[in-house]
Image 1 (cartoon, rainbow, N blue to C red):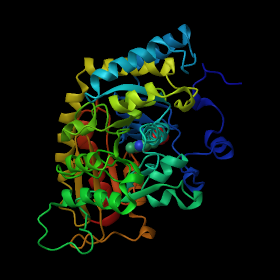
Image 2: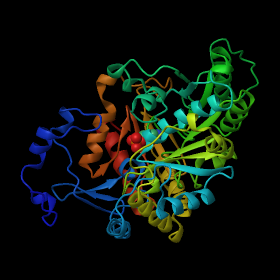
Image 3: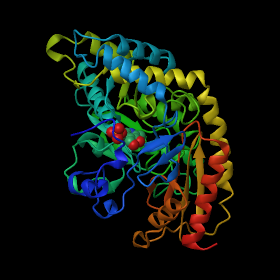
Length: 460
Ligand SMILES: Cc1ncc(COP(=O)(O)O)c(C=O)c1O
């Protein structure tokens, strides 16, 4: 029997039982040979089954933004569970917490995004956004507009539609065929971007403009009358913290408007202060038509995500005739406990001034990481706000990558763990996005651990 009073670490053979009965995200039996079985956390620190502390360099999965161990969030959940653990939010029903959260987000979000639908996470939010884009065009008389354009290295989740929008190809092969109607353009990846073949050496456009124009080229080649939406993360996260040039997003916005393509900002990572503002495209003075979010809204203390719709899209849903109603739903949409946790989490962010703190910490971290640039295999150190990455390369002058079988990224990851730090990598790109309450000393320690680990694997 499950005994909640018993400390979890005292329970039997955790690792053996894990291997026997649990399937993990990106499951891989070899990686489960010696797993961390995380037991507790405080601030920017995670504690595993042996009692050993690790610096959590990715704030969980980019989500635990207020840090681990916030009793206040547990209390908000418990209080709501005692009052009302669940009730449907299907049309005709609502609850005060979902109403209050939507109202609060309307104040924090882009000026024309004032209506919200809640989900249980990022992929559900993106599925909702893609379906809603198709729905919108059908309702307003352009039913052929159904294609969704994403980007190489974009990550949008792993449900079938989200996986099809995701541009990290390793997610596809064993689950194909992908959903039809999804395609990808290249990323605005300053370190590796190449102008498309045939571009003149005298082309006056900046790399950011050229990368944005790939969207126009794709829309024209597919036919604007077939394209429903473009989806992109303001800064690509899981793909390796790819920070676009400043002129990229304004041009993307203009192209979307010109061809009547909805702009979906996937802000599952960037919302709630990760790149400086409550919502990420604010930094570029760009407003999307649809925004998706998850992770930081509850700091991961409850699985909750959502979608914000601008006035036009919301008005279409509101005015649809009964036979064309928005037949989209999740049991847990508007979950009162999740919404209570989100409200308490937003209180913490505001009360403790954590968006300002994240900006300062982001500057501090990036400055520290830049000290690693002189290493012969550190090809690129990049970041925006409080998300950053270090890309390791075989040959700095040519930017040639290491062969995957050299497993440089995993070996560096192993060394960092040996030194007490944990994160996730994309190949040989080491991502860092700690919680907003990390101390400067902890960030300095992260930089030191990463530097030492790179030297341990690749020499000095
Ligand atoms: C930008 C982005 N979109 C979507 C997702 C998918 O979210 P979830 O894992 O909650 O489905 C993630 C998860 O990392 C993400 O980073």
